[in-house]
Amino acid sequence: RREDARTFIYAHWQSKKPAYVAIDFPCIDCAPTRHVFIDQNESGQWRIARVLEESRFPPRHRKDAFDVKYRPANREGRLEEKGPRILSFLDTAGEEIDSF
Image (cartoon, rainbow, N blue to C red; front, side, top):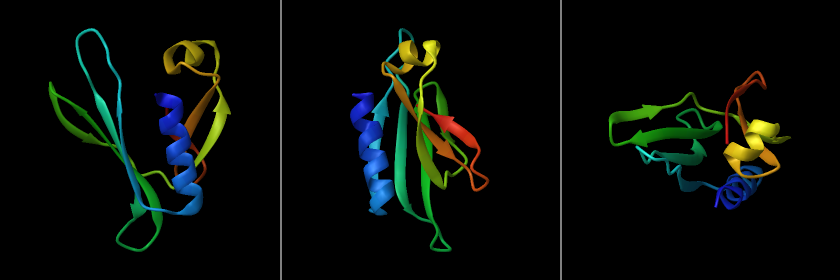
């Protein structure tokens, strides 16, 4: 469940515990998986690395996130993300670079 994955990511990020979770996004003609890694980068800074994997394409590495926050889902988000809140991944400037 997506909300379970959001809670898992948020809890591990807050406690700065290394973690990994794979999140499936089933659809009619594809089955992408988002791999989320919480760990320290080469310089010791905590980050959230994300890789999108889909059988039709090579793995796509996303820009590292350096913080997360919850935000309310808008109408489309409630339907797409199946919940009232969305977990936002933020860059070093605090700007949202991804969410689910």
